[in-house]
Length: 322
Ligand SMILES: NC(=O)c1ccc[n+]([C@@H]2O[C@H](COP(=O)([O-])OP(=O)(O)OC[C@H]3O[C@@H](n4cnc5c(N)ncnc54)[C@H](OP(=O)(O)O)[C@@H]3O)[C@@H](O)[C@H]2O)c1
Image (tube, rainbow, N blue to C red):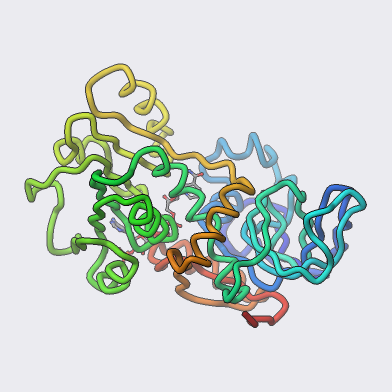
């Protein structure tokens, strides 16, 4: 099969399309023929081994797993002998540790995989799980009816998910983004949109129960006075020198405003929850650009500009039927 491989860490040019051996589904695995996948910020971080500490998990000198790619949507090609939930021909979507930048990926039946939402294309379905999983990890216990939230960086993959999920959980949502994304972010359900090129939300006197930095570009220090007493500053990025986990620990003991670091372990329950939301018309994946798998280097360079709107999709087996 064709797959994007990398055998060393580095710039996007270390990625190359190659013929590799097709995976075989183990007893508890589903072999998925991938129609679409994405390039996300985790793929970029793992490829570049940034921050350096990721090497302790992915291989100190060179990557142990040569094929990146977490999100996938496609068709079940084969199933292992113990699999009961899926059968060949099922359309599925989900997120896995690695391996989706390829024509086939094998995924554990009990992992973050489910039947593809009805009415969604493979490209749309591939762009659902990672950003939304991260946003869920930050927001699920923090927002609800009667609570106010400000989503900073509302135009990214995590941000577009955060706005929609906060709205679904019943919160009053203020979203912060660039001028060009105001309309999009309003269309996702934000009650108010702040253009960060025109207004500094920390200086307008408004306060919130939750400030969610979905893009890792703000800080607890700068947001403190915009938080209500007992407020939560939620963040997906570990921060410079990984200081965010430390702040999360400290603020649990000191002061009345806490830092929460959202770390997701993508689960089947999350994927099923998102499928239900999509089918109820309450969630949609925002796609910025689509590239064929062979243009993965170009796609990756675009993701690394830090300016994508929502998600960047790679089309793999040329299918986009709903
Ligand atoms: N905790 C984890 O396990 C984990 C895993 C993956 C990713 N992450 C983190 O999650 C974060 C978000 O990822 P993502 O894929 O959603 O990001 P992204 O899509 O790359 O975010 C880019 C978006 O953010 C906007 N933006 C850029 N600079 C901004 C600023 N200073 N203020 C406000 N908006 C800004 C950009 O629009 P404009 O430039 O037009 O404003 C663009 O729409 C990243 O920091 C990533 O490291 C965490």
